[in-house]
Length: 116
Image (cartoon, rainbow, N blue to C red; front, top):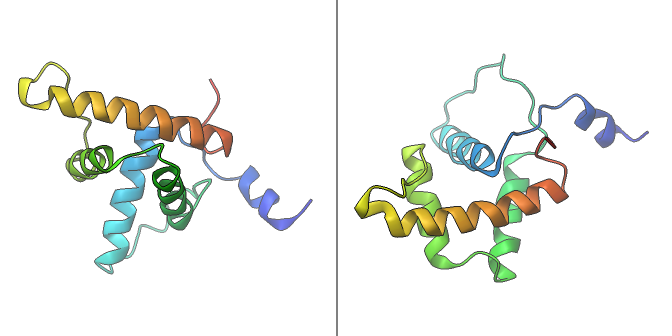
């Protein structure tokens, strides 16, 4: 068994694409502001660069578009998904849902999301 595989066996998987996205934006913000993360945090199944690379690949492959990325960033920074029943967020909710479906599928292929 190689070292990478052994490490991933003890790493915590995510429950959804939204959880990965919120974790990614939060962790990137923490890293960019030079704030040290809590040492008691559990190790994740992937690294920030893995998520960033995946988002880039999905965008370049045409599976995510500019509008979806804007919505993902906007609501990711708010740490919540847009709500379909709030009139001003209705359009964003649809873009968010489609983006999360694409992200979830790609993350499941990589084994980052817990199978339920």
